[in-house]
Length: 180
Length: 180
DNA sequence: CACCCTTTACTTAACGTTGAGTATTGTATA
DNA sequence: TATACAATACTCAACGTTAAGTAAAGGGTG
Picture (cartoon, rainbow over the protein chains, first blue to last red):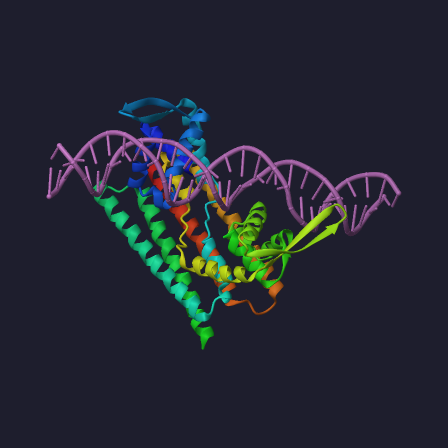
């Protein structure tokens, strides 16, 4: 994903790794794309090695240098392929950690399990609020006309969290029932 | 996750890497846990190095050797921690590839984007059918009383896929609207 | 009993991720 | 104008993942 995100950013204009970092933070891509700083620089080097991007310029500020990259013709073609692939390939992401925890929940006492699941509820509420804050910020930044696709993505994020909340709630109900 | 899955398996009885592989396949953990063969052996070596498991025996069949591992006392404690952590830590998994693809969908022509999303629908239908098949198999294997937590997990898997289908459908509707 | 296919059992190297670390430059404040 | 804090800009090594590869043992068939 990092590859696609980085290449897509560079398709709009030449940028440095740090610029990309900032831009991705703006779009909240860090959250839903799961992009980490280190990966960006790795992706830049790989993309350059593969010829999909090239160094546009190197700025020297004192003892410090800043590399700006631009996309190549090859890169533009590759970008289309990556978008197609991203849209096509399997998109389902199961919450593996929760499933695994649930499948071994009898390793804990009922009390411990309940505490853990209640902690999970708090985590989910925080996530919800955090996405909500990002959403508000986004709406404020764009002012007025929100692109429908962005709306869709945020709707889906909220729905994803709600579904997880539902799951945890049901698990807790089952725990209580078993406790009596 | 692989660590937890492997350690959890070994808590029931001593096993070899291959045994674990088979057992995980049974529980469909390969799908929802995203566990790959290679990771199992890596996890075994790491867990042994950390003292959470130990080599139980080495069987020699001709020129071939089979390592059976067992959990240690340390490992049992660690297992509880891992379960707690899995239940507690953030469980939300956004479909990053789809979000990223959507956010760059204007790199493709409307026609190309539609084709890609229609392909995604097919992928999702296949996933649904595949989970359904696993579910049927599971029910047949257990005969009668399905553990409520297993039921919950499968319900959640189905819900996750349906939500994704909904998302893709809405994206397609928007595409059509924009095409006119 | 020769053949081939499947199952068993693990190895390997390339690759990407992770997150903490480093070091410089700009800026506000006392 | 000293200094401390934030922003800029990347580096790095440890780690885990990934998928293909290897290779022997078992088992059925003509």
